[in-house]
Image 1 (tube, rainbow, N blue to C red):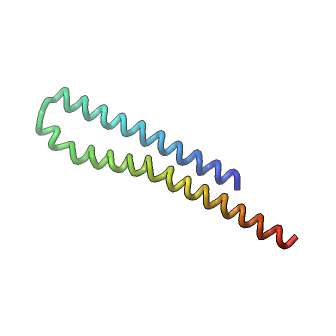
Image 2 (tube, rainbow, N blue to C red):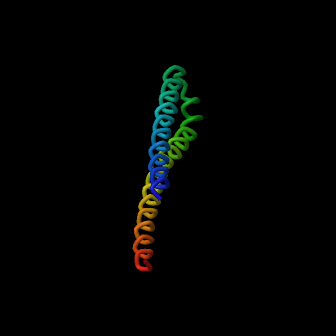
Image 3 (cartoon, helix red, strand yellow):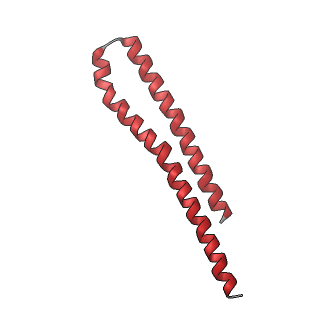
Length: 90
C-alpha cells in the first residue's frame, strides 16, 4: 500500500509542476506575441483559445493533486481498516 501512496503523491506533484510550467509558457508566449504584433485582431482571435487553455491547465494543476491526495487518504484508510479486520481473525 505504501508504494501506491507514494505513486499518488508523486503523480499529484508532477502534474502540478507540469501544469504550472505550461501555464507560464503559454502566457509568456501570448503576451510576447500580442506585444510584438500590436494588432487588435490577433488579440481578439486568440484570447478565447488562451483562456480555454489556461482553464484546462488550472483545472489539471489543481484538480489532479486534489484527487490524488483524496485517493492517497482513501488508500491509507483502507489499509488501516484492513489491518484492523485481519487482526481480529488472528
